[in-house]
Amino acid sequence: MNVFKIPGLKSDFLVSAEEIIRVEAVSNYSRIYFSNGKKIVVAKLLHWFEVELPSDMFTRVHRSHLVNKKYVQDMNAAQSKTLILNNGDCISISRRKRVLMMAG
Image (cartoon, rainbow, N blue to C red; front, side, top):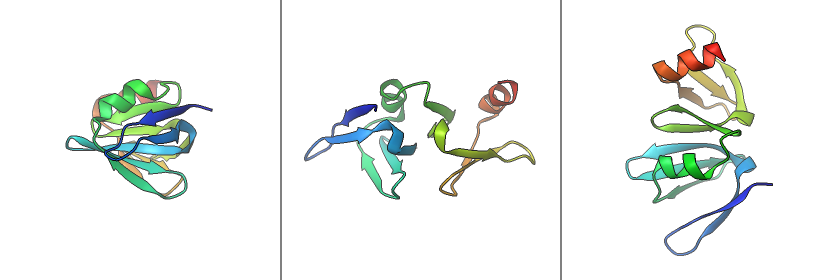
């Protein structure tokens, strides 16, 4: 189980990587979406999560989205521009990442 610490304003959060569905960049903050439906906003850049979270579990599909591969349900077959996650979220895929995902 991959547990890591996210520094917060009042206290630190101990988080299991398996419970994170995705991380979204919001200016100089990041919004973390969990499998239990909760969301938190922390004062960390998306790049910090990209470095801290296991690269075999997470992939950056857009400049503002880091996604847990475990929760990817489908890639929009029409034009492959979006990922559909298990919780129903649709995430845009950047043009460059689209090419890499289609190849791999």
